[in-house]
Length: 163
Image (tube, helix red, strand yellow):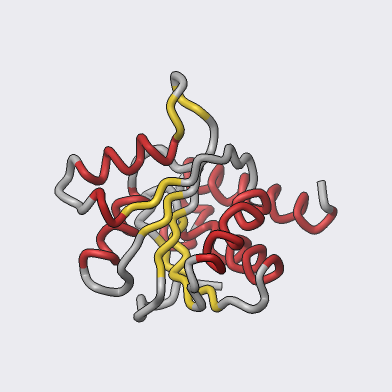
């Protein structure tokens, strides 16, 4: 599944595990442009004792995005499935029905599939953040893009087998 064009939604969710800031900046940009009022930032591991989500929110705020529109997940999530299981109850409690799911372009298909599996009652629309290691899907053209593709392919296989 490719990225969809952004559309109005109840909330934007950015997934963790990307350390350049491209995902959180894309999510914050969608909120600034009025696609949704709030940005939920997923959390991965702790970095020097700080949640990834808090570091990401501070990163976006330092670049002029509205920190008060950001909600940081505190649970440590080490997989997309863990993220979906942590975030979807929060989305339901917020009364959200439609979600812009921001992740890397190589991850949009699997992330959307996982979130739709965990929460078939919610509407998820993938939006890809820019990623120079995706090469427009032509993964074979660059060593970094080959590694990006292989890493995502391995995660897709492990998801299929429930590993």
